[in-house]
Image (cartoon, rainbow, N blue to C red; front, side, top):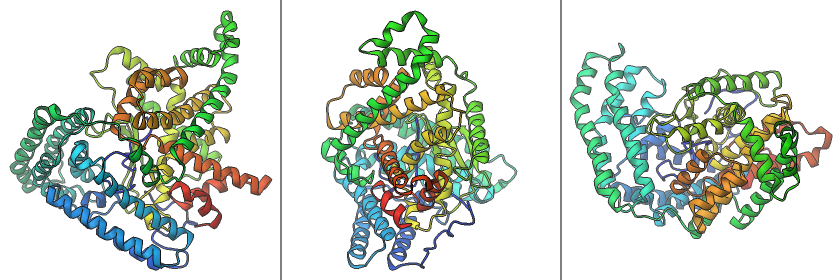
Length: 599
């Protein structure tokens, strides 16, 4: 649904797998990127050194943040290369921990120090527990795809210059494949099946380089070099597909449930919260019940209009299940056609931009740099839609609001369910969340926050929390003209986000079955069957990430409530939003403190 995390957000190390986690000159009032109000501190200088070292250590990380000094190279994915990375992480952890312990840090630097330590600790913790380098083949298929897509997907430099780097990376791909085959042991079956699909996309991506080479910007010598080098790379990729299907899949017997110890530890390391799993699930269930009751209140007038002979159901013990469900089902008849999804998304983005131009509760970044496009094949199949932001050091190179194409393999029933789930009202919610004023706008602002740590390692829970917050905030500010149909579906999205936390914990720390998950999502959260299927798939490919939506939103909701109580009638929604965006993507546990301190 919302973001792939791809969102491939620039959260912790992008080499650590799927568990857990720009942007431009937005307003003259923002501090210039890289500056602290009182000048650089010793800690911020150390953080800058760490980022520079991380760029050298992982060229695809550098690409993701808009640094293209290492476009000729790739990391070493062999067992020896991975061992060197672990040693590198441990060395940096000791340096950062030492600085945090000996320096008197400002509130902002303290939050950033803990964010860096959590980023490193997360990768080291996962290496020692779920071991994604051994159990997640999609970590490698993603790297293979991004090795080229990072250079072709954004026009950060002339095409001929980027193609020269592509030619150098192409010859490195067989080494990545060899490293993957040496490292992978016993993944989960669902992860290997996902990797098979992604690698099929990689083959198409690399085959497509011959089409790119036809551009007049590509020299004859470059075309000749590609013709010489590409066959070996394609052979390696096709060999990797065979390996995934015939060697790895038969031994893919790993357990997708990570267990309570991993799940609970990563609530802090990945999601940046000190709340316990029990506290989060209880809070999510309480809000879930409250929002279901509110949806019944909103649905009753529609129910009496649509189903005048069934009003007795409104007084029944399961009125919320029956009445809300049938009203949503009737309203979902209004949906775009199979070939209208992208045009609808573009129109919804334009409508949000028009509203915010007239009612600037969030000031839009200029110039615009958003593109609504199909998800690249090697990225598709995880969340359905996502935002792939430009890196903070190349913020105008383009941000992509991705929506998966409807697979040709889907049955007619699943396609109909999908289109009903992405009906006219939910498409508006999707575009608010992923694009305006959600992820796209927040990442554009995040490029200019003074903290380098927050620019480069945007916390995924804050990012998701902002996007969830904007769904309701836009309606509260007047978007949609008070249409109760739009509010019903906005609350359905809120149920989905609360349900994410409930099922994430129940699956990974308990025994939640597919039947139980599907019943809960479809009957109580009013999800379509296609969404329930996607969510079950996603649960098996990630952990803690589905909880990030609720964690981030709760931090923002709590901070706003505190500010409203403190300021009373002087509270300004626009000022609150501006302060959040200026602060940047911090761990949720620091949102309230940093808003008060202005850090």
